[in-house]
Length: 206
Image (tube, rainbow, N blue to C red; front, top):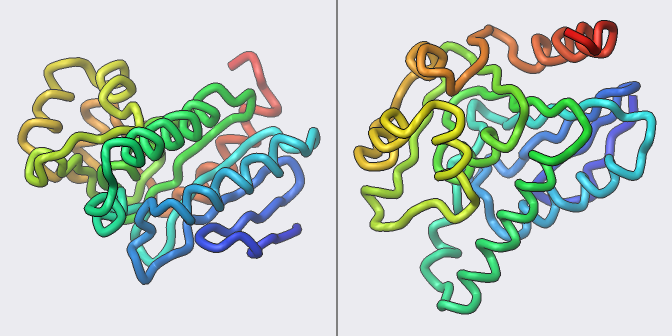
């Protein structure tokens, strides 16, 4: 097992054919600041250069997957920089969605806004029973810019998506599973993700 924690904001660990990226800025509740996203991009680039890696798990820290965008950063964006930031995030998340790797979001605790968009870009989402999901944009007067509006609708349908986007209501893991937002609710999402990956790699036709 190898680890690379040189990129601020995320920690990359490689164990055989599985790479794990941990969002690791707990002081900011793993908010998706520009530095954290650039760190994520750096580690993704490293992973895709390693032909032995077949799967990626993205997880959080300190009972937070991600609290979403860094609101302090958003406040100082002008039209040009906001567009640039949105396109950067869209390209980054699209790269995860298009990846040939098995991609899994292992979610503990809060998964909010852009953090939910990140989870949606993965092929699978496994969450602890105490996980909470929300798109809070309606209460803030903003909307997610990382293509979550499209991915959520494709996953859980228009009606459920509009309810989440327009009410900014928090939903717990059991409800998230019932509407198809989460694939499985488990006590240890990372361990479950590893087992799921091993099963898929042994039986790729399933």
